[in-house]
Image (cartoon, rainbow, N blue to C red; front, top):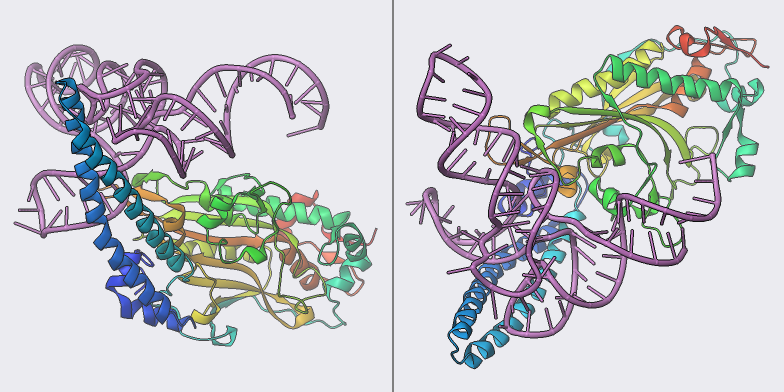
Length: 434
RNA sequence: GGAGAGGUGGCCGAGCGGUUUAAGGCGGCGGUCUUGAAAACCGUUGUACCCGGAAGGGUACCAGGGGUUCGAAUCCCUUCCUCUCCGCCA
């Protein structure tokens, strides 16, 4: 399992029923019924297609005959009547086939990706596996503040006015807070574009439903998105992964161009439906947040190497900002819908005395590529194949900002700026109230 | 928002009811010629699905969807997109 690249292809499901069933069970999905239905529909489809195409073939031949007969001024009423009847039959059978195709596709669309063989089997985040740590959490010889106290005290985070403007889970950054956020965005983009080989993109911050389907936010997770009101087929993007991965939707890429690496800064918008009561304080969970995203399109052969390097690219941001973090390999039960394998980066937050997610790096293999129809022509020649798509945060800007505030706070309430960031802040070494 | 013109293969561009299996050109690939290259000439050229061990065969695709017809790239309806002019606008 995993790595074979043809996951959740209906034909693959039919031919590898047990493997697919086991993979989904490991994810905590009981898909027995759905898989049987898919296999049945697949069989019905293959029975019907040759029959329908045979009729179409006859119809085409008959139309030629009609033209010839007409030219020779022969009687055509017989041909005409036969064709008329066949046309009705073709139409009926076509409608039937369309319905089967539709059922088959929607059944497949509702199944999550299969986990890669290297993913630990488990149910919750408790079953995730720590892969490595970097840096040592600092010990404070004073009472360290949480960012939701520190930020307002410095006058750089304003929760009340954010609520006034837009409601709960919206926040205003002000003065050095806004500047710090912008500095982080520039720092991250510069690192990824100049040292890691990513091409910078500025995409639309709204996306249509085809785009959201391409990366599998739709049709299953519409409740997580903000939809534009009125007669618009548009949603606010929940992550730049959506536009970046869909840049090549419907294309056949030249295998020699792979891997393609994109990075983008965008705001991200999430309704956070169903998360009430979680992280209600502070900047951790917002309806709008900034993120620098990394996306790669690769061949199936190289995608797992590229996942490792993408994860390292994201880690490099934390290293340079001198923030302690760890890398966690998510278990089967904790992974996102589209992912075959995910590493989370978790940064140390003193206020919570724990590591908190700041990046999530995933290989979706061909799962999104199949939906978005992104293929490539192998450099060695041969048939086109689906690319593998990868994405990761590099990093979530708001969470990085609060990690800096909390980890670099001083007893007098000021915050030391990590050296790597100072060039982006006119050399400032400290953030103080003012 | 008002008025008009368009969307054809990787690109340009013909075709406006039936020998069009979508002309022709460019590009790409292969070959001839050449010391090598260019030019010239010849050949070739997409995607998906179905049948088949293969060779090969079939069906669909001229922006998307629907309709008229024995037969649609071509006619009709509709949606989307692009362009031009006017209005508005960062």
